[in-house]
Image 1 (cartoon, protein in one colour):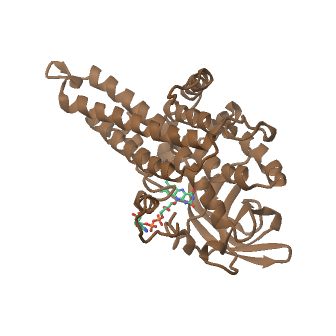
Image 2: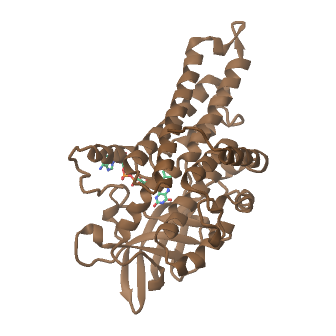
Length: 392
Ligand SMILES: Cc1cc2nc3c(=O)[nH]c(=O)nc-3n(C[C@H](O)[C@H](O)[C@H](O)COP(=O)(O)OP(=O)(O)OC[C@H]3O[C@@H](n4cnc5c(N)ncnc54)[C@H](O)[C@@H]3O)c2cc1C
């Protein structure tokens, strides 16, 4: 068992951290206040190659293996103070690009991946509906056969990148025989197709630099060539990528945990009260010790998933655990950082309160942690309401 990064991974990590610190997130406070997308930083990410890290070189990517991709994403989350920008990148990669990598035809890959890697196309995943959140199989967006293709009718909500996205991976009901899991199909829908209406941006508590919106398909004609996988395989397409979404999406959170730990250590050593550094008080130093424990637990689980995926193995159990541990660990660490900073942790200028607001979404997106715990219990043998894998 080797827990060391390779020399190449360490070098990449250093390069990504330097890039993220120097080039990204300088206007994060303004973008956070306005809820605006930092498009220039997005372009910088594209130029640096971030948007193509897991994509083979033949499609314009860097062709990093899964574990190395995780190391790079963790470094991005560590170096970049704009968690919303990083979340936009992760939605692009693990909500859209991954589906093309796993299920795209050679034609679909050639048509979309180079521009997605170059950042000229922005990707999003449009699954959730007003009446179908955790209960994804309850979605009502319909794809009716129309000549050679389909017509989509339905409304998707809470779509990260939605207002700026050019390519949506979506699920719609095509019906047919078999159980509910065989009645959905996955489609690539582009924003310029007729009847695609980006309805409005949703204002949210955190990750405010990732635009989020409602997307309506109002009789959108979608060619059969835009099916991802075969008709009726939509749920399988979705489930085959959830390991990636539940773990790779959270690699950058581990970087953010380390950044918050370091900020808190600096504060513990520099802030003096009662004639001593506050770190000399056990209440403060234990808070920081717990941050370190959470960070290392999160990282160990994360790298285990990266290693399993690099070996081409299933990692559903590990990815589900990673999602829970990392998302909750980041919330606790951000709360700890706020506490260690006293009033400064509460002030907008210092950025700690933004870190906390950003962290609070993690237990909800990519499947709520309550549902993840149900899935986990089922994976270790408990028969429950999610038996049959129907939750998301
Ligand atoms: C920041 C952010 C970004 C998002 N980005 C996207 C995106 O890009 N694309 C997209 O499609 N969606 C996105 N979502 C939506 C997200 O996937 C849903 O919010 C999530 O699946 C939960 O659905 P819901 O909000 O409708 O909550 P509900 O499903 O209504 O759940 C409400 C509560 O009930 C609990 N609950 C529900 N069912 C069960 C169960 N079986 N067992 C135990 N508890 C249960 C939940 O845990 C939760 O506490 C995003 C959400 C957030 C917060």
